[in-house]
Length: 305
Image (tube, rainbow, N blue to C red; front, top):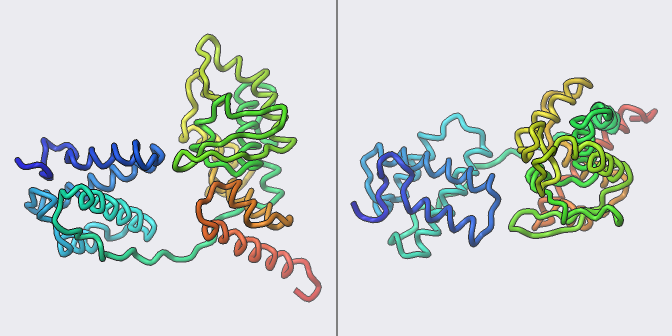
């Protein structure tokens, strides 16, 4: 069967494999993003092959329009937008390599995404969550260090679990974080996060590592690398224990970090750098969050609110 076949013993088409390799080696996207793109393109491949198409050259705008209209019913707008982004990026890649004659995804538009503000914890909720882990045992020391760092720095959970010792400067009190596109940024830790990290590194981590010491900073109970899912479960466990809403996640701590900084006078450009946003427009949503929170506080507490 010719190169570009949509069927290959049930496996994802080899051009998709080639595209995913390009995302890793040239665009340097995160493993999480590449995995999501792989899943989205496997879904598309399966849909088109069931309709009798045998080559990417046979895929036209009509087939893609039918796919987005029929196969994505019931998905949230953000999920549809992400899937469309994966498809458009893939066909741009095929076009750039002269593997298709025309790009059928070129004029397909993104579904409209409702403008929703990020969920943010109050200062009291954050305080309760940070104080929840038992600081008398290794896992408690680790959990407290993680929670303090997530809230003090706003780093992504993927950046946290990939953290190495070479990225920590305890004396100066900052992290060198490697974010999207493999770009590095310096993020200050703050007093509480620094103290929690020092305690974990001195007392907690050596007990978790045992003889299996690794370069990664945060370890699981077996001494291996802590996963993103492990951090999510840990955050939800401690949040449930203090009565914080079930929707809390590591990303909610990132949103809370950003919103609370703005509420206390931080400028947008500095916040953009600390969050690792390429576009300041992405950071600007936090100004809307801050305005909304201040409005609610005014209405609740001002005599003429």
